[in-house]
Length: 599
Image 1 (spheres, rainbow, N blue to C red):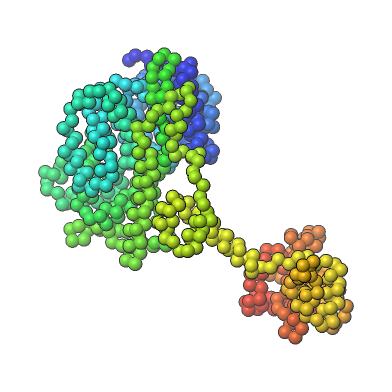
Image 2 (cartoon, rainbow, N blue to C red):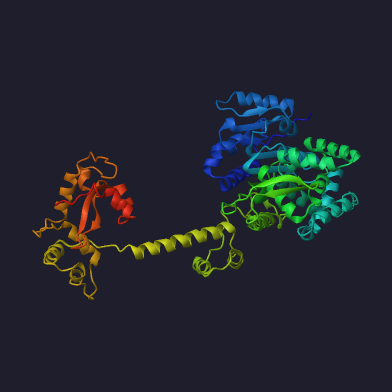
């Protein structure tokens, strides 16, 4: 086997590795990067490990490096053994590793830095990783190939890819039966040499190279690998098949497990195409919930020329796990069963069933829209490293979204406009609308609390003395409050403020000792303990700090003179709790015996 070319001192390759660092940081949080597991093709010099993952802060024991060449693997292992912190080198191809790796191993970053060209074997490598359940929750996939040189097999695939591209708009709205007939009709009628112009071939190749990883990840682990399919759906399908067709079907399943030439559409036809749309929605939900399927959230296409004048093309993808999390408001259980020879689902509640189907429609529509935003510009014009950017980066985390006119959205929410209409009017996603609703609810609650709770200004000492004298003379709180006004004639203090002052008055009408003296008497009587749970305040200093110590709380008002009665000592936390319902019968009953009058 020829020795693999070295890129250790290649300046363009170094720029490419810097782009990987940037892209990973834009799509994963620092904690996710720290915990990330990496699968890569590091080469004998391990430059990708040193310049990418060490810079990101990925732990080396979380990095698996594959190498199928015995000579290259020996040099890789020798260099790795000389390091203090080592990666995990594996002598295997990607397909062999996918077959032998435990399914519990999931990688968050997969970097496939090939030295060859894109072909069918590279596509099968991607498919093997996906079917083997080796991608994490938010995986990042990086591909790197040499540009050009399509072989006969690649040209055949590119012809079909070009066909799909031309019919994309129609295929987005086609029924499953129409799609099945379309593939059966067109998959063998194209001559590999039918596309002769280089421009057409380059366009078709770019489309296939950029779209294939997305199609593999969208298929994910494949529904045929899910226990729901194997244990419940597949037995029913086999029972309904004739013997000859059953044998052919089982052969196809074996080929699926090997991740080689597959006719997935046959299984899809047997599973879904004979069911009504409602059944299709239900099984889509069940299979997505049970398996691993992904939708793309970011894609960048790059191109660079190495110092040896080799043109390389690279694609960066960020995916997110497709999940349908059933909201709490829709309480429904789905159980797939066979009824009258048809596979169907039994629901626990008919009342929520229509809402459940509408919710599935909305979730599927959102995932489809997010995927379409990435797929529509494919093939992307590649950004050449070392040259000014072409401003083609799309839908990454630092994408500057247009500002939301929140006041208008709040007004629409208040008027009762339907959610879908609000989302279409203001171009909002479902999470954005949920955030606006939560913010609107918080603002309304805050305004209501401000209106209900009247913040009382601190009473001036001189005003307090005058007010105490007037209250002792028998004037009520409203009359006393009207005497203290500002320059505009508005009352400075509310009547509630002076009603609280009455708690410092003795019932026998003697000169008032003031609130501080009343507080000291109550605290000494209660032994400086909270009367809710008798928790002590051991710090002497805290006994006089209201924010951290004890409070004097009144339970009721005397009906004769409207003075607060039944004063009691409470700590800060329990005092705040009693303020919510301090005059309720339950609270009065709880503190009645613990809070006798101080006179």
